[in-house]
Image 1 (cartoon, helix red, strand yellow):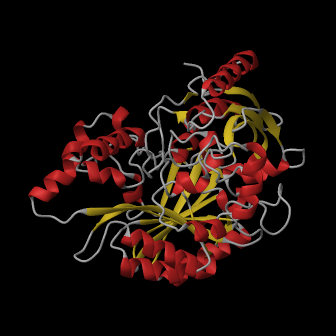
Image 2: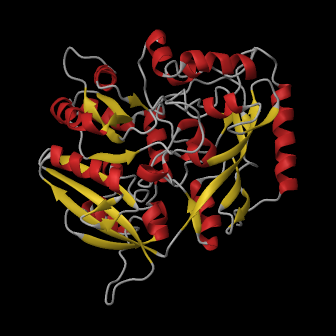
Length: 465
């Protein structure tokens, strides 16, 4: 099936969506009906069907010369990359999981190993066509009459409107990515190396195009440095981590590796980083018979939804006398100079491993002032590291569900960091207001959703509405 649509088909899909919104009475909650989601926070039911956005999942155009693309908001990065790679290009940041949508990555943030030089996905957006809560379709750019919406849209999670189409920048690709996995036995040394790469875009005299890291424990971590390559060295075969081999385990056994650009972009999707182990997919015996088409993040997501709905694993654990579990699935941004403090605290207090690290620095284009994106107030010119941890921990006697997540929130705030909102959040409303651009958000919310037809950001992120 082609990933492309036409401008005429796009306009027809937009008109249908506007008509659906107009049919919903004012006062009734509005939300999207999406086939897939990468949100871990629960969502309460509204009792009525959501807006059908299934027809907004294609690419309108790719310009391989100008390095731009016009993309519908519900297009997954899997289909977006399918459209851009034949033109020798890719989005500036391609989040790790295939079913993340472009609109989702912009309104809910995203990150990957190019973020140390390309920032976050919304920073490569040139313009956005947005359906607002008021039912209007507006085109927002960094400097037009809707610039306030353009800058408030990232991290708004659909509480201001929905991205119908986006014009984005692309970058040129090469056929291969050459990888180096460098081991560190000290978290401060790892942090120093990350800071140097972010400042110089090089390591040991060699340029770096991609960088991330994995911490297995305080004494074992790996910095992965990627560089574009036009050809493979003589006698070298590229690796394949879409079958029996598991990418994150290769960091511990290989110091160098080569992947095609396609396989590099999706290296984490096959095993959902390392979370596939919870479903037995990394068991060597089961791995042999597990179909390759089922080794992907959206399959594991369906398993999570079954557990959330029917709790088979929780019931089995209870019968075995095991304590209940608290889900601790979070991504946080920490300034690089505070990273050792956070990692030391985390490894001492939270029994989760491995941990993913992804450096990020905001880009210079777009935005005015020191904090260009008010709903996720990272500072221009400062180096951050995204810390991702995704698992569950036992709820100990005397503790309640959510206590560990609250501890994480407190520590992140103490260190001046930021927490993504795709998962469970426990902030009180005043704290949330201070952390996530409350004043700027309220002004834009009033301007583009004056009747409050869309749930507020706090209602979505904390109250799960």
